Structures are given as structure tokens and as C-alpha cells.
Length: 122
Image 1 (spheres, one colour):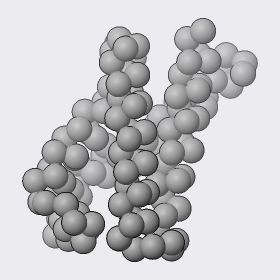
Image 2: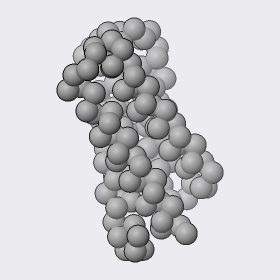
Image 3: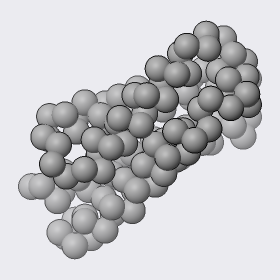
Image 4: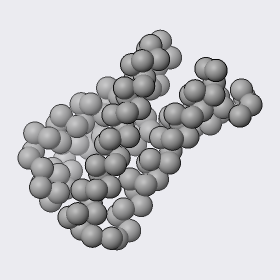
């Protein structure tokens, strides 16, 4: 991947993660709809609060260049686990349906961000 292409891919994909997993979560995680969604998957209410805090922190780590690469690796791993477990939770509770597309799309965007991050820094 060319350096300019990697940089563009990184910033577009990472900004999408930031918007959907950071900003959106920060503003909606405590709504009744979000709380009911967590409950419907069988998780306790406090899990949603903890998840929102980690998501917001993780997106900031990915977006701010000053964070060390090792910390960024942990953030990528955390989002990877989050998206995989979201997929599995939705699959187990709701079966195969269109709702499974969102975590799959998130995983794809995360992989693009991760690969372009490493392409920029190699």
C-alpha cells in the first residue's frame, strides 16, 4: 500500500470507528433504548456503562497520534473482541438476521484501520 493511500485509508476508517464507537456511544449509551438493547442480550445494566467508557477511551487512543503503538495495539484488540462478541451475542440471542451485518461491517472497517495504521508506520 502506498504511503498516501495508507494515510487516507487510516484516517477514513479510524474516523468512522471514532464516530460510531466513540461519539455515538457517548451520546446514546444511557438512553433507554440502549439500556434495553443490553438487557435483551442478557447483560446487566452496568455492562453497558463499562462498555461505553472503554469504547470512548479506545476511540480516543486510536485517533490521537501521541499514544504509543503498544497502547494502540491494545485498543485495536479491544475493538476486535468487542465486535466479535457483539456478533456472537446477536447470533445467539436473535439467530441469523440482518442485525449481524453491523458487527461484520465494523470488523471490516477495523481491519482496514489496523492494516493501514501499520502500512503508514512501516
